[in-house]
Amino acid sequence: MIVFFRALPANPASPAAAGGRIDYVGAAALIAGPSALLAGLVLGRTGWLQPAVLAFLAAGVVIVAAFVFHERRTEFPLVDIRLFTNWQFVTVTVAAFTAGFGVISLTSYTPTLVEQGLHGSSLAGYVPLVIWSGLSVLVSLVARHLRGRVTPETQLAAGLIIIGAGLATLAPLHDNATLLRLAPGFAIAGIGTGLLNASLGAQAVATVPAHHASMGSGVNNTARYLGSGLGVAVVTSTIDPSSPQALLHSWATPVAICAAISLAVGIAIPIYARVSRSGGTRSVSGSTVAGTPGPTS
Image (cartoon, rainbow, N blue to C red; front, top):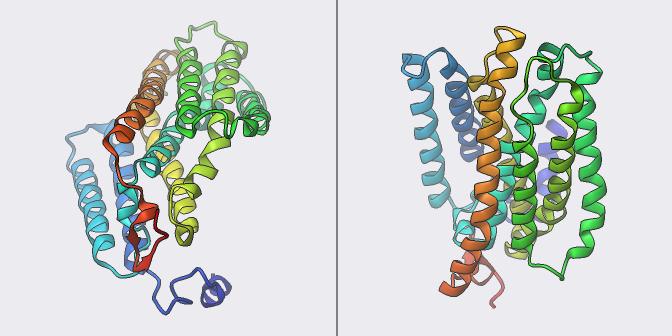
């Protein structure tokens, strides 16, 4: 960490190199706010009206709101809130968050499901993840050739819809279910994830001014991690691990939530893109952000 912070002034893209300062307050708020929300969601399984649950959720909302307020006023923000006036940036950020919330959160819990619910080994618990991740890598390599042939929004939407369709097949699980029951769903989700990943990174950078490329990439990665964190919290709070049978039967609830959100966002993206284009929403690339003028369009 010491080496990292000493190297920051040498980076020409860093606030320190530009004569500014690092947004420690924004960084602290960005950590504390989502952490409080996650704590509230995880504790919610003990009762949503418990004082501790309500306190964590309320604190999370307040801190996130304070983070937005601070970022709008500080000269060198961690995240320039004005980037979110660009509908393309909003689209790719929401897509990243949805991928984290949907497929990544379910894959994170799958080893537990296989070991405790399907009575598989520790090694068998990672077979669905290998299927999902392996196909996502292969498809992302092929999907790079789609650039210029389809719009980024179409590719993002198609990826999320395929992910949602794959997740929807993961439930219900009966008492005699085997590991093979999960394979087709994770294979389909892997195809959708690969299609999505092939566009996420490039769009995250392409939808912000050139001098904010690192911020665009950072926001996209953070959105994915926040989505996966919140998704895991939802999965663990809606599933019943009290017995193998209860685990298998309750698995349908988080699957339905994650699949529905993935499908809904996938369907909404092209609609939102069409409305934004027809409305002539201004692109951030033609505006001034973070005290540095962006290129004019």
